[in-house]
Amino acid sequence: MNWQFQKIFRLVFITGIFFSLSCSDTEKDNDKGKQNLYSIFLGEFKQQDQVEDFRSSLNRSLWNKLRIERVYERNYKLFYGKFSSSLEAGKTAYNFFSDSLITNYKITRDGKPTLDTYANLLFVAKYLDRPSVFSFNLITKQTEVEWSNFGKKVIALNPSKDNNTVFITTASSYGKFSGVRFIHDAGLYKYRREEEQSDEIAEFGNGVQLYTYWENPDTFKVNFSSFDSVNSIIVNQKIFPIDLNGNLGKIKERSFDLLQNGFPAPPKSNPISISPNNRFRFREVYSQGESYIYLRDFSEKSEQIIFKTKQKIKDGLWSDDGNYFFIVTDNEVVKSSNNKNEKGQQLLIINAVEKKLIRTFSGFKYENLLVHGKLLFFDERPTQNAQIKIYDYKQDKIIYTISMFSGCGLANLPM
Image (cartoon, rainbow, N blue to C red):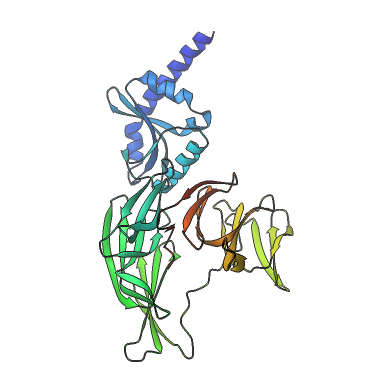
């Protein structure tokens, strides 16, 4: 009976293969206009039996999005899903990999291998003693130089939402002189990762302050300030808007009188209080030297206090599904290893569904939080050597620490 069942199953599956292949031309016609489709490539096989055996070994939850493409008469490739970006395909593949549903994969674009922008994450570290752009692979845990330019030091790294277009802000030199920051020969590059193409799109010159940010997913901005060439108590600031294609928009200019207005400060981060799934809202109540954090659950029509701290909230970020909330508190004075008073922060991990604080990191500066699928990346910056932590917030564990000889950071190096 078992043999007969296997024979029937084999016949049905092979019929399914040929049905899939016979429909491939129709699917191609239907997919006209859908350009740059990404998929998860799982393997290449010479025999139909090999495809069947491999498919049968996979978890049944994957079966409905598997597809087979015949490349040559006796050559078959097995793919999973269709995605709008390499990041989304890579995120799905990494989740399968970390859950042991697959053991080996590649990301393809229209059937051809391409860069996995999810598994290969960018960060800043020193190469030949100049800050450059590195890539870290989540699967192999290997690092390599991705972008470096002779005579240019990376000040800031700002990837787009899909992690493919990257804006790299540089300078020939920067630092402090007599307590005042300086930036020489500042410029901006746009780097396309899949094409490995880099273009310089703006030159800012010399200044005393530069900061970058995404105004929205399609608009990147650079704020660059310099002293007025005639009146040294005036600081002139220019705001450069750039779209994803690298096109420069209308430049906004404004001036600050140092005696009246003080030095222009970068805008403070304002944590988004409402979760992406619109189920939760957090609020901070500061009273008598302590911050009380409340979490409201709209679905349950309830609100309760999650924790309290003597520090104020500096930044906050939700997970993509809205079920976790990450909070960075403002600086506090802590004792270092050599018994000196130093400033530190707290990074708090909140499970909103269970309405509880599940983890507290403390004692260092925590910056540049990045939600990356089910992972949270963040800079941990002690006084000596900055490093990047990779935290699986659903399993509540640090899975890896990126550490380089001269320090590293997700967006920049400490200045």
